[in-house]
Length: 435
Image (tube, rainbow, N blue to C red; front, side, top):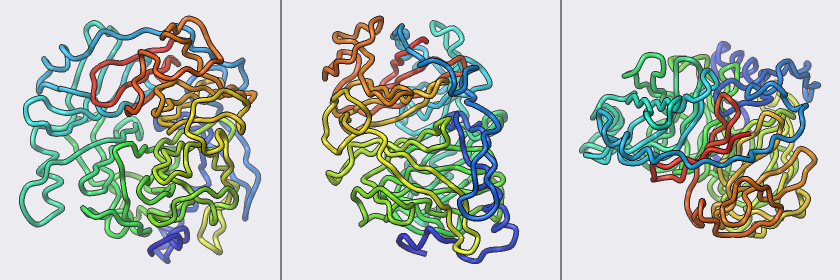
């Protein structure tokens, strides 16, 4: 199915349909970045009530504590020398994700020094001065795997968005084939096709995850796993939020459906019902403890520059669709970094939102290079003080802080012990904000 008709589900096997119903019932509360989103129980029928079972997985306060302030900023020692000396050598990092199973365990898509090929690494920063680096994909394996999708000469794969799916698996976005791949986490050197019919041309199609579904992935498209085999995808080129429902990377009945968004020609701004909502180049995804999915919009077509909020109320079996609504969380579409209450504040090409253990939303205004924060009472400010003095919170939003370059691309992660990490894409430096 093409276009927004992809929001409904074609008749698949009973097993697949049942798996999707079950998965969509296990919607999220928090912790999307680590693949351990808390579980909610939807009531029967359309728009059933949502009951929390587990609070945020990122910290002990859940969403009920005081606002979490990241007051201490540390620029970690440049990881470049350690990455260059790894086997094989790594030149730059692209995107990062944190694992909640350990306080200082991260995963990253990266670039090999000699060949320029993409890879996935595990990064243990227990001692940042002596990081432990493990390459999870053997040299030349990824390119051969992607080339196998196409008839013709070899293809150099390009990995971007990354997320921890579970204890065994990391998932990554592969941009050349517009697919999502599964990489072994507990057992390295495992590489599997997870979702997306391989295609060098972007597509917007729902259906069987591996043989029909089409994506238009982007270097900043993020993946957000939730429990129950659900993965939300920021399908940037299709101006849509997609859902993968799979019991495992090998699930033959895995499906892809469109949660909301109008497709490649449907860029715009429209709040309201999932069926009618419009987005402009969504990139970042994170799950909030208050049972909503936070989406950042890059605004390639001039109608973005907002954080949007998706509320899921249930699943309509008759229509084969998720039910819910989209609201604007922050911003009025003006590309600027301005502090104010949520809807009056302005944000400039927001990127990489993450949620703290107390329910605050953090992101980077990539157009101006400013770290932003929405507090639990809805006030939006810029907690990084002028001049890069992270020790003092500031409600002033001043572009061009020396720690964040305007017009760059960024990736963020909340670590297992609740610290905020920021990576500038294409570098080997990480900033850590301690709470």
